[in-house]
Length: 624
Image 1 (tube, rainbow, N blue to C red):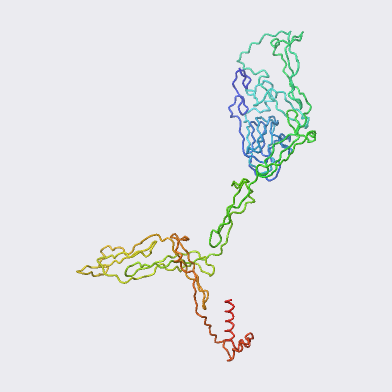
Image 2 (image 1 turned 120 degrees about the vertical axis):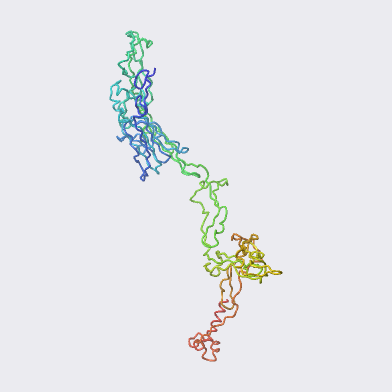
């Protein structure tokens, strides 16, 4: 039968996660949280304090970073990653428990570092982060007993086999080899290493209930045989302080011959005591860390690894001075690396035209990241800092607006009588820059004009004439018809006042019409102001081909395109007569021929002649 955690044979009690024999996991408290503080200074920063008696300890980085976790006892002894020395992943003893330090593969994994321990701790421990880059977050969790839970200290002070609150406490994960551990001094560091005494079930007489019948004692064995130490077990290590135990066999007291153990009294068999062996330190060795990630994702980069001089002693790996490893060749700490050949940026197209005809717009071009094999790859494969611009602003000059008009429709809306002709009017940006043009403003040109194809003949009753032709040859227009009140007489009709037919429903006299889509038509602006007031100038207008939805089109008939430029003000210039500027002498032509107009006297005396010559010379220079 098995022995329960309360040291009773046949008991099925086990220790729960709170460390309570036969407990139901309700006598402890789970403490957890995430350290997310933003740190600015490099170096050691305290994250969390693990109290005495904590179990199920889990300290984990939430994602991979260049930071490191560190562990130190409250007494100041470094347990993991102390004094700026980074330890290799492994198992490290501290605070009365064994911590497992994990650092996932730096190249292939995205997980962060972690400390794991079953506990319980026998002193307060401090967890630190060696800050080198932004903190990704540190998750911490541990279990502490409640107010009515046996503490590890009370467990250590009781006598062997003594029940405490009806149970024997036993920290989870202990073994027989922990029994005789006491305070010992590290021969390499001179630091004291504290251990937690642990009492194992079955090593001492168990507490027996009063109503339990004592087991029948076996008969006393023959005293001709006794236990004798015949040697020791093999040392657990070849160097650096191991342990071994004496070996006892049952022998004949007289002949000292070995006999089966049944001849000796098992209750008198000595308990093997652990003995230290091979106390001399192990040879120092270079502890080689893993290579860091390559400093560049493509092309030639660098990677680093940490090389520490380490030495084993008392089942612990310690960092020692590097001169202890001088008998060994030191491995390289840096190496070149190249994950792949870098891709490069290529400009595949020229700049497009500006996105607007005037004002500030944008233009684009095609820029691709191309691998060394010529394939187009993701932009992240190339150096984003060297990426050529694929979009930029472009300035097409200031914009102006003008009214754009079509020609008047050829048809009148009424076949007889009064009707209308129509045209399309739209305000659009003007791109003619040779002459200044104002904005559209509020003076919208008229879209209709009256027309009359002559009087209509008389009809009948509410007489509705036939619909006129559509006011437009294409697109939306209107149709009209004459509706009059007539009276039928013998041989003719008499037109009456509309009031006489008011009791009848009057037919509509106008309706909308749509013959076909217009397609593209020529639109033009009004003529600009003439460039000169006399002697021949020119005026301009802008002509555009627009589709039904008023977007630019190239489907208009070029032969029907209205003129964009025409001459104007071709009459000769007539100088204005200045009553204050006259010739005082009849022979002023001689003054002009002698070129004396440059003198103030002659310019005043022959004002008209000198002014006329001056205007003629300025016009000549202007034509040049």
